[in-house]
Image 1: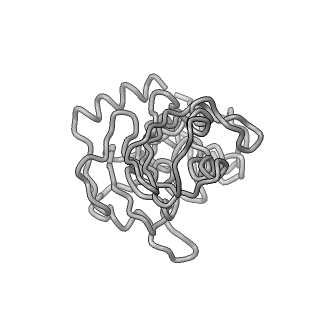
Image 2: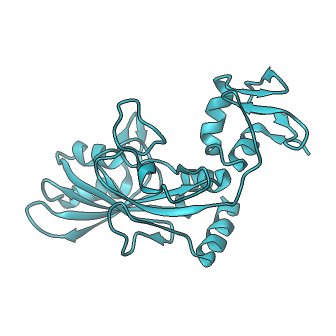
Amino acid sequence: MKERLQKIISQAGITSRRKAEELIVAGQVTVNGKVLRELGSKADPERDHIKVKGKLLRPPGERVYVMLYKPRGCVTTLSDPQKRPTVMQYVKGVRERVYPVGRLDYHSEGLLLITNDGEFANAIQTGGERFPKTYLVKVTGKLDEKGLERFRTGMILDKRRTKPAEIRLSRAGDNPWYEVTLTEGRQNQLRRMFHQLGLLVEKLKRVKIGFLELGSLQPGEYRTFTEREVTRIRKKAAKS
């Protein structure tokens, strides 16, 4: 049965559907020896000879879903040309080939999901209100009511208004902590939003994605999903 190439690639656990689309457009996917760059291209995974970056596509193994407490000082990639530590060094006990879902920047920490389920990864990254992301952010000063309202109504980044964010004071002080929930994920979004209001981010920690919480995990620790979490996340992903 023929399906869209990006779906086949993501289901095989190679990468997320969004990244698969980038690979197709870049000419790094072939079907029966022919490069296909159109995102609407289809293939039959049972019959066609599909290669991604020169490697033959193989059926996925067991689906793996991991929650990692990403420490500060590592990058959210499979490898790094600058030889910096990557999050993958913390999940060496996982047998299947997996990859991180989305990103947390080098200086940020907290909840990061890692999987080989491309459909799930795509749902998390594009799910919006189904998979909101909650952060604890320590900044160099207190927001006034006008600043809080800017978060709640949206502000202009890259010539586009951000979606409304939930924000509340989590811990008072000269350098207070705020809890912020976003339904979108632009690059360095929180750091840029606070900077626009004259504040710098000192620490940034993601504590929740959808119903999944960081819980008692410590930096560098991970756990696999429970069966109940897998069932619940698949149902939510299917609706995205």
